[in-house]
Image (cartoon, rainbow, N blue to C red):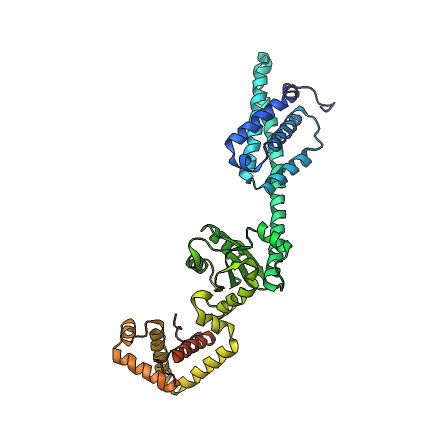
Amino acid sequence: MHKSEPSTPLTEAAHSLLGMVDELAERAHLESQRKEAAYRELVDPAEHLQACRRTMVLVLNELALVQSADLAETLTYIGHRRARQGVGMDAMLHSFRIDFQIAGEALFDWLATRPPDIATQWTDFVLPLWRAIDKISVVVSEAYRNAEAEMAGELERDARALFHELLHGSGPASAVVRRAASRLGLGERGQYVVVRADQDVPNQTVQSALARLGLRSVWLHDANLLTGIVVLGPGGYRQLRDCLTDTLRTRVGASPIYHALEDTRHLVWLADAARDATPPDRHAVVMAADDVPSVFVGGAPEVTRHLADTLATALRAARPAERNRLLETVHAHLAGDGSPTSTAQRLYRHRNTVLNHLRRFEELTGLDLSRPSDVATAVLSLRALHRLTPEAPPTPE
């Protein structure tokens, strides 16, 4: 107690309760264990009991006007420790409130045993107790947030190391990368897809959207590209595609599924090719395993340019309006089952009109749409033309 401070019922009560701090800490420990699952699952009971004792001593020292040189150090340690143990801030603060509640109840129980002229002074206890609680809560909350910021920085560094090795390394995944992958929630084997997208939203937006579906993922923004490694769930490839379509509004490419994490470096070029199949500043999600022609167009720029130029040159003999009708008809025909009747139904045109358009397209391009190899050339040519001339009619899907 400071020598300049006179003794009061509150300081006497606090000094008295310091003699029974072990009993109060045990009560607080048991109550937190009963009410907070995070403490039962993540914090060693002996460690938590010791923390309850230290907190109880700090509260009572504050009320007894005893200097506590280690207050900030103790609370900083507890806040950091709980953050790194994975205890949520709400759960941690609830545990502290239990400590405060038990300390407050013990103070008022002590007051109730005093003579009437002292027992009625409970109002003198309330404000100092609240100030002590507020002081301790502020310090421990700040320590917790600082630890969260430190861990976020560590995760970012781990993510960068992981991505650098997986995307650019040439040898087997190192032990360092394996540890980083484990820290980030990835294993050496699983059902993985690597995603590449033009930067559109913060990393956390995509990660949170996938997490709501129960999908684990790690994302990194670098050089205006968003790169993600996603662990597929029961919903598989389609679930990932739908989530990416809803979350991102830019060009997105996804690799086929692979099973060894270190194979990321061999698959990322397919994700890049799928992304680059879409013209810049357009929104599309291309899944490489579902759309091989688009991957070819995105991954072979020289061939793409040749196919687009060849098709555009062949169609110059037609007037612009006719050229657009031909492209629309051929697109619908190749996107369907190859039946002129089905194509006519899709376009609300007469079957003979469709046949005339197909024959005219064959006449101008020299392609025979009854030959599989020429059909493949036509599909790739249409996609190439749309990739380099976005205003052209849509390509077959």
